Amino acid sequence: MSSYIIEGGRKLKGEVSVSGSKNASLPIIASTILNGGTTKLYNIPDIRDTRITLEILKYLGCKVKKSHGKIEINSKNMVDKEIPEHLMSQMRSTVVLAGAILGRFKEARFSYPGGCDIGARPIDLHLSAFKKMGINIEENYGFITCKCDKIISADINLDFPSVGATENIILAATFAEGTTKITNAAMEPEIVDLANCLNKMGAKIEGAGTKIIKITGVKTLKNISYTVMPDRIEAGTLLCMTAATGGNVKLTNVNANHISPIIAKLEECGCNIEVGKNEITLNRTKKLKAVDIKTMPYPGFPTDMQSIFASMLTTAKGTSVVVENIFENRYKYTSELNKMGAKITTEGKTAIIKGVRRLSAAKVKSTDLRGGAAMVLAGLVANGITEVTNVEHILRGYEGLDKKLRTLGANIIVKEGE
Ligand code: UD1
Image 1 (cartoon, protein in one colour):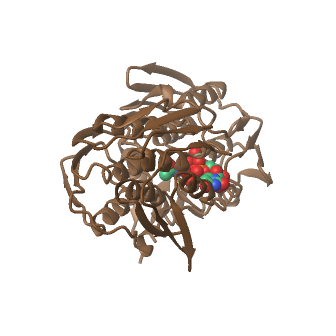
Image 2 (cartoon, rainbow, N blue to C red):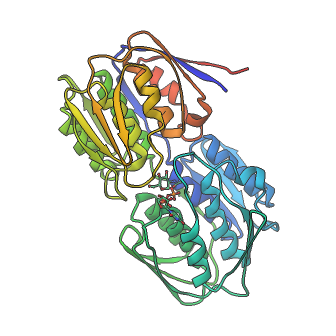
Image 3 (tube, helix red, strand yellow):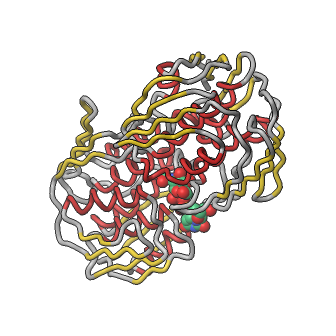
């Protein structure tokens, strides 16, 4: 496992472009299975999660060509319907491949998905939706086999607006007979991006971005090229890092509408934010003020920003209260921050952060993807030289984070693991 070595105390300054969205790329890569032809994708971030997803597609028989920021996927000769366990177990979002494989072949076999250790993360909502669509599900020795003669349209009410389940239903319903209706659908921008991509291929998806999505089955899809949306969590992360260091940074390739709850909270903390077309500038001159945050499904405050925002609040003036409503085990990083002098106590869904004057450098570990980014933020503001270990978690989801931070004046280098 590698580490980041960070010398704290430098203000981030300058301009940096935000990469393409991890969470939009994964279902969009899955959607290329459906058209049985060629899809050219732009703005896919080069991170571990997209590389694993592309590896799975190759294993299944797709041709994948990468060149100059473009990924061309040809799924014509895809034959295999079984996602290999050693790749499936590395990340949870491989589960959306099931919806795409089922949509095309009416059959898919996979094991329970892996991913960050932030809670139980069951897939019951995905499987019960598949059942409603006439798909038989058998579970044996940790493997799930889904099969049917045809996928039928259904009215599916999600008990919780699960992002992955909404994506899986859309993918499985694209070729179904009739109109499938999802109520209490997830409204995240990544769902809209997936629907836009599929609609460009010729699918009929209405209402993405609202609570009710209707998918009317079509017979065929066509070859397209598509540019994935910017990563809203990377944008939020870089803004919080700038705010924490008292810096002044302009982000380009960013959609401010996607991060309005983050912008609102940063303003409440005392940051100055200017929003332009595809760009955001944050400047912090006054001391940060404590604020309260509550994570919620979109358009609420995103759970993926919780650890990063909390890390920034460790040196704010006053006491902040954080409530995590989406995942039940997303405070593991707090004990690492406390090693650096933060004062965070947690109980159940709630974390209480008493602002301290300064963090001090320490050797700390990335507990998961976003928890790792929270440690990097702490390293940027701490007194002395911090080592953040297990950066492989961070590399799952951030494209060239250390390089971007160096562009902004941070002193951060990678120490390769043995
Ligand atoms: C996606 C994002 C992840 C983000 C999360 C919530 C991707 C690749 N990942 O994850 O970064 O943190 O949305 O915004 O897009 N649940 C069930 N049963 C299910 C499915 C989910 O109980 O069948 C629960 C989960 O345990 C969790 C909550 O629903 O408590 C939210 O999960 P979900 O929206 O499905 O998240 P993911 O799609 O896994």
